[in-house]
Amino acid sequence: MAVKPLEPAELADRAAILDCVAQYMRGQDRLDGALQKASFHPGATVDYGFFTGSAADFVDFAQELLTRYPSTWHMTGQSLIALDGDRATGEIYFHAWHRRDAGEGLQDLQISGRYLDEYERRDGAWAITHRREIVDWTRTDPAADDWFDRTPKALRGGRLGTDPSQTSRT
Image 1 (tube, rainbow, N blue to C red):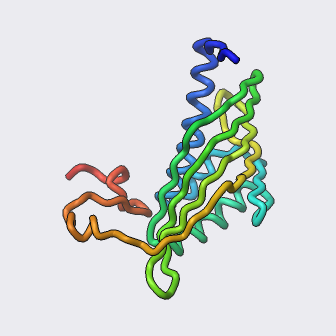
Image 2: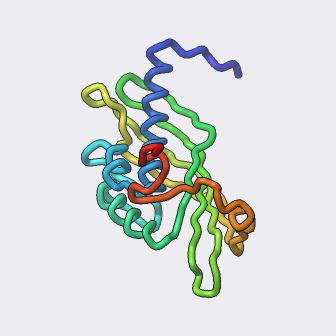
């Protein structure tokens, strides 16, 4: 099946939706709840299976949960977005890494799956109105960071305002 070329307005809408998704991920990894909440319109809902309810309550839950991990990293992959005027649906693939202390040493938990999203444009801004997280696979491994031991001057990511993207270059 051939893919129809998108019009400039459709490209702009798609880019705005993908920015919204990226903002959500950044809010998680930088522990910035306000940024993560800004990815949702007021009244938005979520269904993660283990949490179903308002998006605002979910972000509070997720931010508290993520503080238990020394670091996390979330990435989005391919996306299918269907536009319909001021509404859209999307299937966004994701891969998430979580460093955790399992009590017997550090572990790396990986989770991959898809977000099945509904979006709306309100007052010119696209945001999520409903999100379902579908988990396709997980994996837990012992942490192995010998590269950081060999490269102690590497610039490392941080949270709560300490990340290089949140600080000046000086």
